[in-house]
Length: 489
Image (tube, rainbow, N blue to C red; front, top):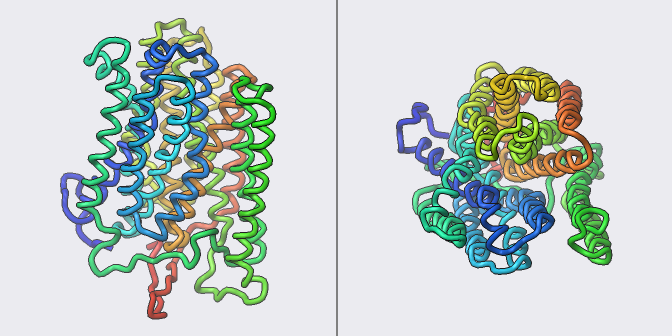
């Protein structure tokens, strides 16, 4: 841990790591969301139907669910410096593939593979937790998440202009290509300037890479249950592409995806057993125990916070367009107020967590989230537009501050598994987005907002069961000695 002061104006020590981390995350989000603002140009250029465009949007998020889990494990094993640099370099390839695509199939494969870059977020969570002490961790993780997350809004503002500068209906290709170049160049910058830990600190690695460790028999079964929604979300995505949904793939393909997901879940169960079977015969010493319940609660809260943010960001322009009969440009500008809040809200949620405790902060923000979405469900064409925008911004404050508070808590559960825990929690955010957007395809806007408010109430109830991280985490060094890491005052 670095003991130097927390000053955003500095670019040395831990502050340099924080700035390079949020920049890396920012670039991953620019690349991941580079399609939406150029959607109309891509549609015209490649001659795509509305169904094909919807399919590309679904494919863009599909791979992120398993990718966040896998990348979390790799980060714990190989360190954030190597994994982030590799991710940025490798994901520039499907970015260039998409820029050069001249058919729907090529574009679909590229968008599917680009879902992997959405896992970048998980890497920085572990890196930042290595450099900042517990009393600054929420603020640092909030800045990392909030400023990085802003990459999606930055893409929306800048890429259409870049495409117009290059001109013609092929201008979008240059805009997409430039984001790929940014990713490739920054992978080198990141690798050359970052270390996994401050000098003299130990980077604790998990004993196993294939599955998450648990420390009690009950938690073993709890972990297996909490894995199911991630597979269910992928099955739901497959169903949306099936003849029952938008009819992009045949029933045979869909059935084979379902069988593949069941087989994969069975394989994962075997890996969880392999890693954790010893707990059924030998109790884990108390000093090394952690409660998986903490992870499960954070998963549910991130489902409601980041899940709803991803879903709402993609439908809000249309909501304002339909409700207030605005022009598409005006609706886009008004809706962007929701994403703009990220710059302050997420760091704010982390900072409040540092000052007033993890659990009280999460309780207040989750309650605010439920009220905010209930209010959004009341918005109709009789409301003044400015009031609807204020309601959306107030709601987004609780959503994004809640995300900041969730990830102010994640690194305090078990240090050597922070990447795995962040990966699972992050994946639940994407599961939430898939579920909410599926709900939206069946119901009106009001019901959609009420459903999110309902899940926030469920999150609030589960939060009552969570215990505030306290005391110290014990980690074992390679020589067998134990290091104690403070997680509370």
